[in-house]
Amino acid sequence: MDNLNLTVETREVLGKKVSNLRKIGITPLHLYGSGIDAQYLQCDTVQLSKIISQAGTNIPVKVIVEGSKEDNLCFIREIQYHPVTDTLIHVDFFKVDVEKSVRAEVPILLEGTSPAVRSAGGTLLQPLQSVTVEALPLNIPASLTLNAELLIDFEIKLYVNDIAIDDSVQIINDSEELVASVVAPRVEREIFGEDSEGTEVIVGDDSESGQSDETNNTEE
Image (cartoon, rainbow, N blue to C red; front, top):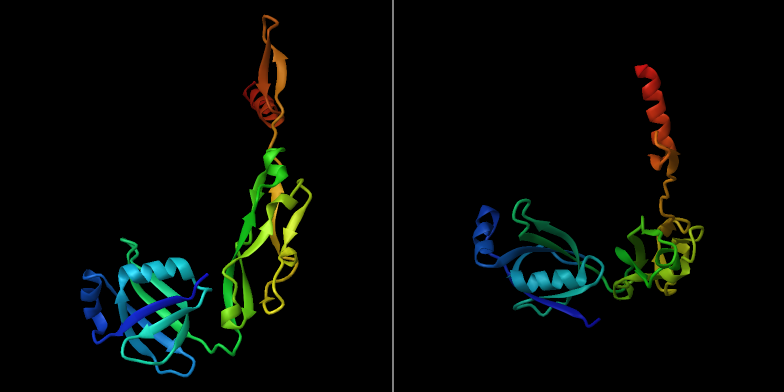
């Protein structure tokens, strides 16, 4: 992915008055972190939303403050949305030192289709959607992948230690943590009987049959 750049402006409006900025399509920002004083900034909401969708919280963004020559390599650390309208209302950027390792949440993507799903009708489960990694900011991966084609039956499972990763990146999660598996489809047995005229009919599964008998005995 190409480097992500975001041009922002210094913000003079503070407190409750920032709501006026949002009405004209501007989102307030907060920049803080390594070697700088906290800065109050603002940015066009449309441009900012595009950067958020591309960067998430694990891809660094170069934040360029108009009128300043300082480079700010940042991660998005907090995104606030309106609880009712779901509109963007505030974003925090954390500046990092490119020479120091940081931690970030990286999504896990399953590629391909499991044969146990395709041929045996199983259901693919992925209880772990992301892992925490530690690396230099520019080495943080956008995502990590596992091959779902390896899930050929219901016994095979994929764990954190199955994720292939560069030596420059360390996964913090337990290596035995389950990432994905396929569970077998539920099959209910049907019990066949005969009605009073000798015609074969479906009575139900085992559990339903047992409940019905117990209920009938109670009524009698």
